[in-house]
Length: 145
Ligand SMILES: [Zn+2]
Image 1: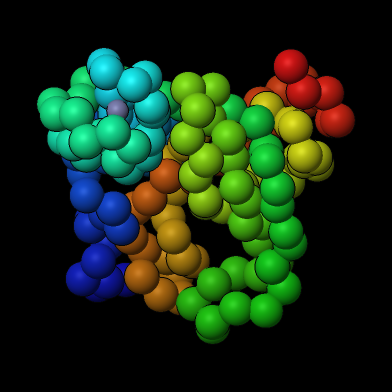
Image 2 (image 1 turned 45 degrees about the vertical axis):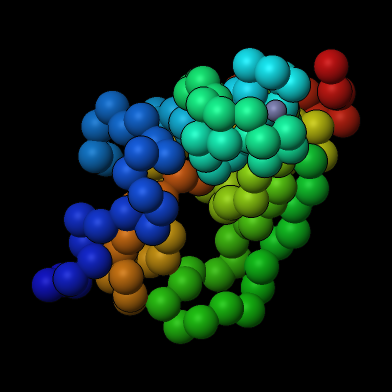
């Protein structure tokens, strides 16, 4: 309460397309795609990180598969543990790091969707907004595409 970071974003706002400022609301990650070499990367830059072409095109991404994850049991006092930290391979190509929210079981290869959430427990610490991932149901553990 009275948190000075309550309405701030952890990442620049032009990295995200936010529909509603609410925990769990769908959010899209704004990535960049190079028209010259087809590289897709997040966060987005004007200049291609692979070949140097400029300008790159903005594309939106919101779903992917769990690439790897871990259950975090020890963290700073402002975090609620345990939480799940994961690398998610977005359908468009970039590998991004974030938290997976919810109580559903997850597995490597499971489908997830980007949602808006708080980095830390709002009651205990900074409530800065960021992207997180939520399992997509029905999940298909162990099944990649
Ligand atoms: Zn390129």
